[in-house]
Image (tube, rainbow, N blue to C red; front, side, top):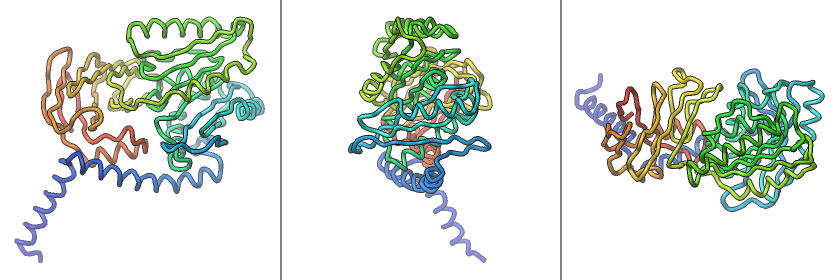
Length: 383
């Protein structure tokens, strides 16, 4: 039988432990995050070793084969990663395999890992339908531990059907990319506003009239021109239309590689626009939502200045705002305004569980969060 004094001591110690996990100092949060990141990276390494041995990544009943080629010496801040998407699409397995082989030779890097996946299905939307987001998330986590890839130097590029994929994945997964390059693709219903914080390079032949690619890519460039004027300093982009070239651009698009390399991702932009695609996400940069309640087309825009958070637009039923000491000063009160009216002005605790969850999701040192706010019905609470 446990004595009363012993039981009281256990309860008090338990309370202290809980308090320590939910009221971390800035130093304690940083130390916990560093240790947890190493622990989870070691766990990912075991999984990645098997993937790299098989040269394929498995997600449920989908398999994505891949090849990698490493160029140059590893920089002090880690390698770059270029994910290069082949063409083909809704054709035969043989044709898509041939396009995959071609993509392996299409671009050369000065430095970095050239990662060429083989689409898990033979379909027109093979690079932007379920479960590409999950497969890419896994491949990036594995590249971080296998080749010491820097999460701020990850780029996506693709030709033809691969360009279709870039049009969709660049905005939908914008918080993953340092920059994106689209070659000879079709924009479809891609959410252009999500590109606010990543550079986008577009290439098309002027005679590439199939599916109106030449017209639509030019229109996309014009839209980006307009958005750059509306949001100065955002929507960095280039447009290349080669008037006399058809679908194959005679490798003129290779100039994309050094352009991509000139950028690094900003993991914590101060002004974020997020519109849900048909493939829903539960997080975008430092914003999140309950995916069970998310709907295609829902728009959120939130901006941060100092410790002031301004919710400009929020169509989500529940909005999460993830915080860390690089985005705001968590030693001071955080103010939140909705439609110009202040609805929250309190300290936000650093929480070990939130740190663990954010590391588990990405293994991304730039997106490790320790605090969280919940916005619902115009009201804000800490979590």
